[in-house]
Length: 261
Figure 1 (cartoon, rainbow, N blue to C red):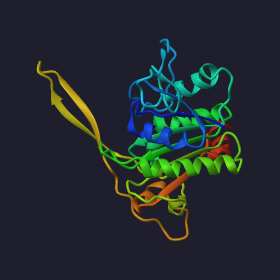
Figure 2 (tube, rainbow, N blue to C red):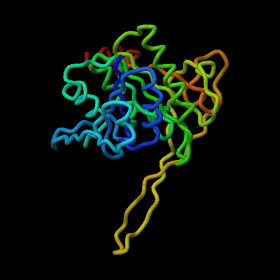
Figure 3 (cartoon, rainbow, N blue to C red):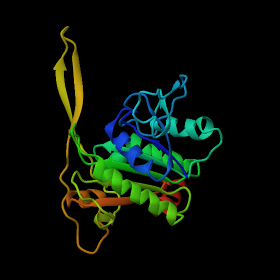
Figure 4 (tube, helix red, strand yellow):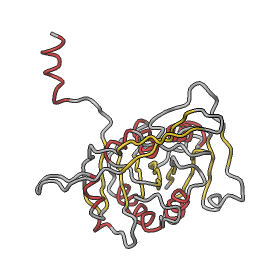
């Protein structure tokens, strides 16, 4: 069974390598990932420039596990191009994106290239899974998350979930992850507190580095569905289904009556 794997951290990212190594034990894996990092590009696609593609050479560690391409484009480009052209009509069973460096929770889902690759799969009538690790440590261990990602991927296929489904999963940075740690969670609404660091270059020109500070999320009321951020803060694994319809159905009728009539 063929699985298309992509990410937004780039084709040389350790999270991608861990994910490919785990899924290759069970599936025929095909990689189409950005040639360079594309973090926080959201669902951008390339229209004004050609999209260059090169096969991964024999020295690349992923080539022993399956076919692969480095794509000079965004994560959404990678999925579009692979399904339309690179796979020669061989439709993958699903698309798996990750494992991202850093969590993708709350409003960050709207910026995430990792999540956008999974939603692009849904646009194309496929199932998309997005996996992220809650760590920016260069020495972080993606292994526990990759093993759980394999099991979740197997379950999605075994249970024949509907095409067009998108599931976003975030792993805490710790060993011993299992299905027992997984919690069905809703998307939270908190986001990073933006910080712009002001600097001067050697010629005296002003510039800024955009950074951010994590927003602490209080525990919610008992009895309601927890948010992805709450679950992750507890050291567990939030599993969040994402819908593609952005319409606010709660105000749709009122909007027509109060504004447009």
